[in-house]
Length: 335
Image 1 (tube, rainbow, N blue to C red):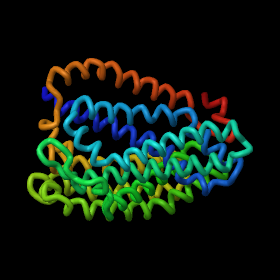
Image 2: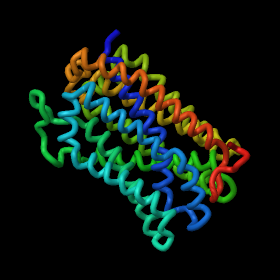
Image 3: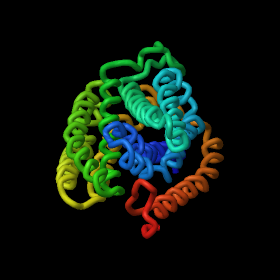
Image 4: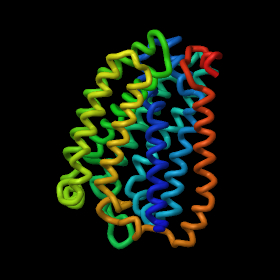
């Protein structure tokens, strides 16, 4: 068994879980100004209140795992992306504070609502910018970052930031379709219909640009044997997009969320095709960046206990707070 490959998949799993699980509550924050003040905003908050802070556990696991399992990659990536990463973390902090204070400081609720929205927008946008900066390439000399403070800032990284805003908003809207009722449910379905073509459009732009950023990306997508994997991807993506569009116009409440997740999954698979087996895309492979085998084994012993525990309490939280939600919380008969 190759421990380095195993750790790469553990970190990829943690990041994917974060994107999916924190993505829908960031999406609700992005859409927040479009909800009616009062009952609609309270219901939207209640739809994510039991799970939003637990979702961020996966971000900690992904970041901590990268530092421990691939310390060279951590040492290169962090200096290259200080600005967007710090902005992302500040956005998450501000969003968390606003989430709690809007219930307790009703006199200034509109300001806390604005803070919740801005924190969500900044966090989501900077996550996309970070991904774009990684994909476009990080300057590495020897074993250290050799670029400048503003290297992360480019048209491609900004496009990735905008793309993630649309994608998270779509995920948040589809969550509201599934978990809410009445006017907010109808608004969520309307947002899904609007956001689906916009999201597909920006994802298409990012997908079209990515293979030309780096020679290795082009080879993995358009040369044999990579074509065996890459040719079905547009077909699967098209089917998922069509099913999402159809589900947004019909009565099935869970279907839009499921098909949005399918699109996210295909995007993450495409990202994996582009960069594997690098941990700093186009520069450093997972084996070059890996910690010693003894360190990987030591951490694996804790991860074998920790990840099932996180999955267990996450599943339990979602199970307890299943069903539809109103402005006063989850309906008693759903528990």
